[in-house]
Image 1 (cartoon, rainbow, N blue to C red):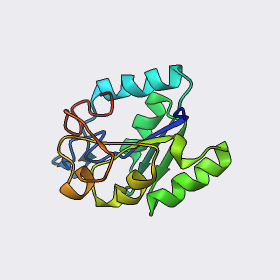
Image 2: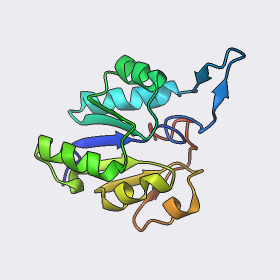
Image 3: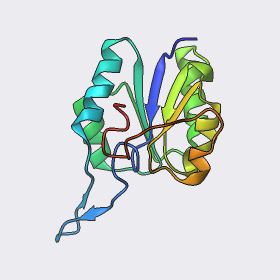
Length: 146
């Protein structure tokens, strides 16, 4: 079955999982432009894109807007329920979803997705999910593009 929705986690997947703070207390995240191009290429191929994260930040909103991501879900728990609802809206099944994530809060969604992947530095519980593609790149280093 063809993939119709590609969804990604943010911290540890689109970013290196680091939490950066300026002297003024501003929170910062480092995104990789290659991941952004990867999302653009998926969109050009007709695949819907989504970002889903437990956090709720303006940084992620800005990045999603810049990339023209089709769906942005912030502060959503559990992630699998959010994606199930989106699948109903799009009239697709979880087997038509590709998802990439790196930590325990991604476990249920990764276990259910039709295509599942994790960055090279994902936590052990995620890297050991049956059928998961363990990427060569770490989070924030182009893993989503890979």
